[in-house]
Length: 487
Image (cartoon, rainbow, N blue to C red):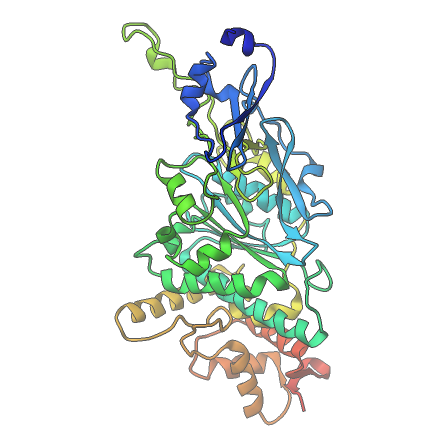
């Protein structure tokens, strides 16, 4: 029987393939296309079960060539805590979990992709979904804010430097620890969204810049990511790393970190040549699973005479941005594509289509009960001058460590584990109140704290820290705006 009869060009054909017992399905996509007499390998989708079976589907044309934008319904979590991020090759919705309501667990996630694979647009969509689902988004864009500029103003905390990312991670760990203490006192052993706290997502984009070998904050960042993974999941604080590479050494060189993240949501966009071997070695892809490579463009390679005209006019082939494998989903070897996000052509400024995706509402904010734990860094997140001062302090700490003059990572963002021993703002306030002759006004507390020899703080930082101390019962709110130590 000829291949033309077996695989007609105008119909969808599905083939179930089985190899003999003791063998595992292995395939070469180019060889398979040749055997089926198909010029465009993009018409073929192959799924394996990691063992003896494979499902081969042949389409009349590439089924993922054109993707629509998402609908508002796609962006809202279903009863299983999932959103729709795109479509599989068979047209079925591709879902990704933001929260697991069955276990009360926040999610730990990884998104991998080479330059131009669509990682930034994928991140923008996830941030927009978080905003629409009233999730508190803390987002560090380590490309100086260039990866997702529309996120500014649409997330609760938007960091653009490694120093601010460190402050953000320290604050997140401190909030997780504060929630642990509160939930333990309440007898709670699971997280419920909005009861009373919102779900929090901490995302580090271009994470390899912070976690790769030789990066200045690698040790502390790795420690904080691991600590947040341990403490945050059960108290409603998830985390995501978006990176260019998947090799363990590019993500902190930590076996603990690898084991923690591989249990979460893993998305693989177009990858580099050596990434597949690394995914299997790092345990992010089950042994035996095989993924068809994602090409850079959808145009099949066709040999033409080197003397034909028009050879230099073929750079307009449609790209494959957004095509991916959801390795943690139910169909890890099924190719999918993310929704079209943003304008089709580049914008001179902020993309209006992406801004519309976020919507006009204010983003969800951290609960006031945790402001004291998040400390001065959270209070200063929208104050460029105050944040710049905090970041300079982080950089100075790092320079001292590098020169062998200090130890630890400082606690400017909330007294996280591994700190340098510098006094937290909350402790400085308690010391000022203890040294006073009676209840003190907020302005007097600010003056006393700024006279104690520590780093200068802002009035907003004092107010936030006082709110947290009052909620924890360490200080009393008295009449006429006065505060005193709890008796």
